[in-house]
Length: 364
Image (tube, rainbow, N blue to C red; front, top):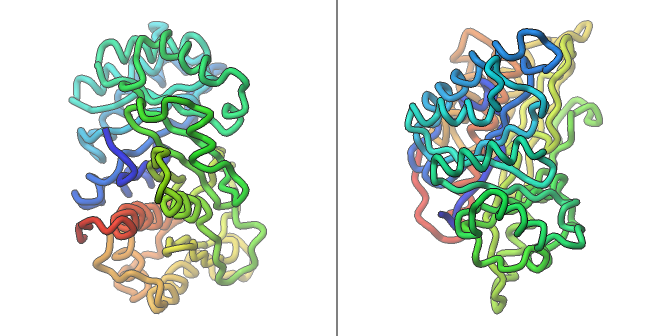
């Protein structure tokens, strides 16, 4: 169990995220519980090899969690997968993945919500029965408008055979907006907010891509962080339970697989106290552009700015500094720059929460 002094980032389970997690300090790891989404590539139900892919990939996912996160607690969400996919033996992928994780001593909590079908809910129930770790219920923004939300939540818990004190409640607001609902309003819709094992609000403010940005430097407001700080200030004299802070790190809140052959820009996203500093480059394959060489040039520019935390701050910051000071023979790739940005963000968020609450914050 954790409270508002903790952090819940939403991470898609890809190599950039694996490496970002693996290179966190023990102090940063202790301050967060990731909500990991398994991405759907390679799990298409129309593919005759889908079942065999699942048989191989699901245990490998468990191995990667063990290698990159260890036995620390995490929430695991398979809702991005097509609900029809099954292994060659007909087993639900969530059951197979948790069985593999159990063999490796992983501490995983299954994530579900109202949009999952009966087969998914049955798999969550079976996993919860076997592991005794409870469940994570992810409520979407649209769910908050349901007329019978409290009753439907209760019905869901009855079906899963868990009580509120065994449930981590995550309210996912999607796009972070200045006009979004406040914590008191959310808690009022959910009822008995103090009885849940944990209560987290997640949102994200970054755009889907950078096509609307010109080449150069830009600031994008961390609206979700400002929302949480405002709610924290409003707690004085109020008895509403303060939610844990959650976000989508440096990515868009809606997942989409990147299209093959995309001409992505050589860009860096760097988290600062109230904004993301976005250094937007040209398309890597643009005619007459500098291509991948734009990355070290942008890193050099970033390293010299007051917002830069220094090479000792995190693995990601060390990567940026070395690239900017030409201590590397490579330029990096979109993936390596994403992992550096995510690693910096995770470190920054955990420390920022601690500093805001005047708590001891571990150094890198």
